[in-house]
Image (cartoon, rainbow, N blue to C red):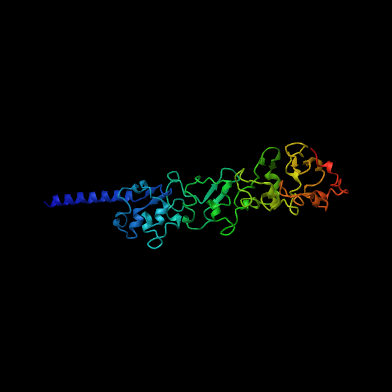
Length: 355
């Protein structure tokens, strides 16, 4: 009988030893690839802190490993709200889930073969060319939740940052606005190599009146933020420039005023394809009067600079300036030049009034 009891006890001990070994094997680590890659959970390290099984397996986690990864709400934001790991990792019971990333994510002390799990990266290249942006987590010590996952999906290569995103409350530019952090317009602070001006020509307008704009000739005057996005959006074709804008400090004419750059009235500096209108052509201005009509041709006046007439005494838009003969005799409107000295006198009616 005694030998029998010893035999049974021996079997129990062997069984317990086997079970303990199995548990030890399981507690070496459970590899989680969600919500972020490369987290190894160790039962052993948590058991040492005197947490019982019921602490986690009573509503936070199923008893089956990795079952939580199947849940749609198994994301970092849930942890920040106190779910799953965040029930303890709240900054009180344990370090907060949005701090000390290296404590959980591989690449910062976790011992596992590199080929098994992609490591958390300190440095990330945003962009595929040599002119891309080398982002360093070390230089951005803010809590993870500052960027993930409201601004960036925590996966390398997921962000597709376009030029049009610069200056908007998106991606890097939520902070790099010149207030929270240095302004995005200082290109070389982020880009590894010099950022070339966009190639090609951007046409403002259509047909003969179009203006061919080239970044290359404007870049020496300032950085991208001199024009974008305050004066011009980043989308080609978004700017709608009308003639009245020439007289206001808008779009091109913030710089192209007389003091800063090519004056706006030097038309042919920009409108290179625009030729002076021919008499009787579609750009001839016709003024109907009680006498015979008056036909004004820019071509016959093209030897004079535009600013001699525009914006004073003539507005840039046809019909805005009222003209009467009595005022011309006093040297106003057409009479400013047609005074018998600079040009024939306005009294020579037939020179202008024709059928």
